Image (cartoon, rainbow, N blue to C red):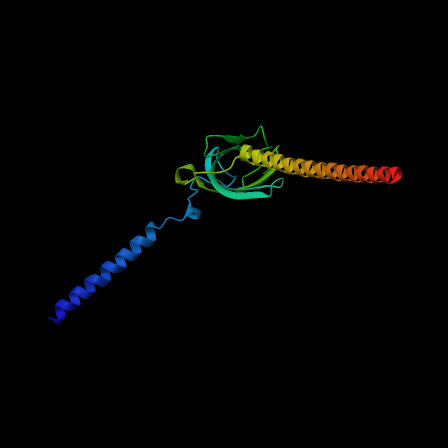
Length: 185
């Protein structure tokens, strides 16, 4: 009976240990991508998984996304957005990315920092990311809203000035009529 209990407990312990070890090896960590084809002189031409940080000073907007990027001759040439759009070397001077990291400012004033984190096949990209058009539209919306508020304030000020002027004219007219009545008496 003791031997049977020992076998049952031993099987449970061994099964638990195996389960835990298997679970550990299957954990997915996005920072543990393999870069098996990284050469001493940088990256071969192709598509890679990258962490993209951007900052747009006009609106104070910043964010981080995981997106696909294109590398040619150790230069970052293109960023692919999840909406099907892209930012390419017609909007920025391709920076050297042979070290796996690069920074640049686009022609629209958005600052980017790119860090290669894996191969294309190992990439779980962000499903939504604001592209530059979204950022510029946000800036324009903010400017429009500020202009509208300024115009409302100006309209309110003009209205108040007109009311004060009309009140003053009404008081002067009333005073003039009172003086005329006194003079007639």
